[in-house]
Each structure stands twice: as C-alpha cells, then as structure tokens.
Length: 450
Image (cartoon, rainbow, N blue to C red):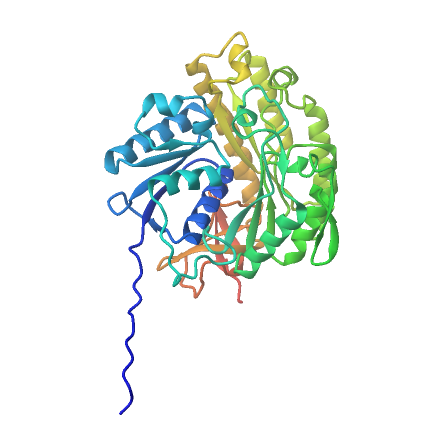
C-alpha cells in the first residue's frame, strides 16, 4: 500500500479590487492604460462598479471648463458611492482645486504619474503576493478594443499657445526613445492590433529634445525623428494614423509615405484659426495663405489625403471680420473632417488676460455658422465617394450588420461606415465596401465579394 503524504493546500489571498474612471483625451487614456497594466502586474483586479471596489482611481481632464466640471462630478460621485478615491490626471496639476473641493480624497497626482498613483494605492490598499497569477500580457492592459491602440510617442509640449495650459500640466516635450516606441508598436501588432493611432501633444516635434538620437530596433539604426519613426512603424503591416501634427515644414516629408501606402493618408492638424491677427494672439503659425498652398501641394502628391482639423471660435478679440476670414479659409481648404469649440477661459491660460472677450451668445452663434458651413463641405466631399470601393476596418457587428471605419475615419471623432446586411464579419476584420450613400458625416455601403 503506497504511503500517504501530507500535502498543504495552497490558497490564494483574496483579490483586492480597484475601480477606475478614465476621462479626457487619448493621451490620458494611455496614462490610464499604464496604471491599469501596473495594477494587473501587481495582482490587483479591476472592478467594473463602485460596490465591489476597495478604492477608486479617477483619471481627470482639466483642458477646458466643461472637462473640469465633468472631472469634478466624477470625483464627487466616486466619493459618494465608494468613499475611497485617488485622483490623478490634468486636474490634479491645477493647484489645489481637487483638495479645496474634496478634502477627503486619499491622494492627488498630476498626469503621466503611474509611479505616484501606485505609491498611493500601496499606502491605502497594500498588494498581496500571488504566485499563481500570470500577471499581465506582453502588450499591457488597454482600454481600446483589441484591434486598435493608441501609441504615445512623447509627453508634454514646447509651445506656449495662449489658450492652452498643457505645458503647465504635462511639462515640456519629453520624447520616448525610438526603440522603446517601436518595440511597443511591434508587441501591439503581434497581439492582434490592426491600427496604430500615433498620439502626443506635438507629434511633429518628436525627437527634438533627444536631438534626433539614433536608436537601434531589431538591429537596425533608426533616428528619433518623425519621418524615420513613421517609416519604421509603416513596416509593421498595420494601419498607422497620425494625430496632433503641428504644421512644421518637415511634415511635407511624410506625405510621400502616405502616397506609397506606408502610412494612412490621414493628417490631424489643429489649425485653430485662419485670421493672422488671431493666430498671432494665439501664438500659432500666422500664414493661412502658406497653409493653403501646402494643402494644395500635399493633395497633388497624395490625392487620397484626408485632413482633419480643429478650430476655436470666440477667441478674445475675434471680430466679425476675423470670423469671416475663418469661414473663407474653410471654403478654400475644403477640409475633410473638422471639429470646432468656443473659447473656454481655462484658469491659467494667458489668453484670459487679453482684451475684448467675446460674449457667450456671439460665440454660440459663430459656432453654429461655422458648423453649418463645414457640413455643406463635408456633405459634398463625401458624396463624391458614392460608387467607389473603400477598404474598411470593422469596429462592431450586430444582427443588423456591421459598423466600420475607412482610412478617412479615426475612432470616436470621425465618421462611420454602416454595412446594413447580413455578414460574417468580426471586429478587426478588413473588408472592401462599395459606397452606396452618404450624408454630412457618415457613409453606407455593401460588401464587395471577399
């Protein structure tokens, strides 16, 4: 009879749950993903509700007044529903705004502060070692769907636009080493990501602070500069989409990469205005005529180019003539995708000190006129796509069909492609679609035989 051995039954410690609320722009989303990845690496569970959370982290935004109010409401709700709250993000960098409103929060940090947030979590919810957990996948924890991901290449900004407080919140430009960026991109693509969305505060300035230092990726030398980085990213086989591109002269270098298919033919450039006087007050490039010439040249090189931009109306001192110049710029530039905001007097912005602030009714009236003008341009440009065949990336599938995006559409901010037919598709699939109908923003199509 075999001898019985005493065995000890290994037990796992109870999992500690952290709730997480992520607000703000894609750059804040990446900050959240870094914190969530570290949480999982240390054995914490991420809870989907307040009741099961041992504490809650709120990643805030502080860019404009509406974002500040949304962040304050989120903190208030988390305190009311849970009671144990750690605040991070841009609002946390705005002096003692959080502490004055909510003295009972456990800790407050600024943005891009994974280690500080984790230190606060360790203090109030110490981790337990669990040797059974394979803690985190190689690509980290992401808040986006599996088939696309944001790739942050730098933090901070060297510009001092008078309407913006980002340099105050996130500091000056800090570019990531080029091999670090490319290694992360490679891991993401290996994990199934079909689209890389390149983000930063100023994508065009990538590598300036590194003096364009050459790094090595897979044994190959790559300069830490936007053009060389983009060429390397384009070799991975995924869609590569550029956001937050400041219109430096060297942006011209990447248009041929778009024409040859290395990058998506898509540029997100926040022009902000067209009146030279207002652009000067904003401390932005002030030659709209030169901008129009460059756009014309870009389209000659890459006719499929989609240009997205954002603008501000009601900036202090903006006259009706300034606004008309902006509308005329829209007519001439014929931009594909456009967003517009009324000026928001964010605390700490230098523009708040300028004279002749525009009243709220005028701001709203100009916003409406701006969007109506752009809607006509968008409707006409999209109508020209009817009858064409477009490659699209599927985002969602239901019994009614599928929702997808073309190369002209970034997630969450641009239009959609609706496929209203039975189809055996999955999120992340590429498919060719015949464009059947369009409106001001979206398109409808049918699948071309696969």
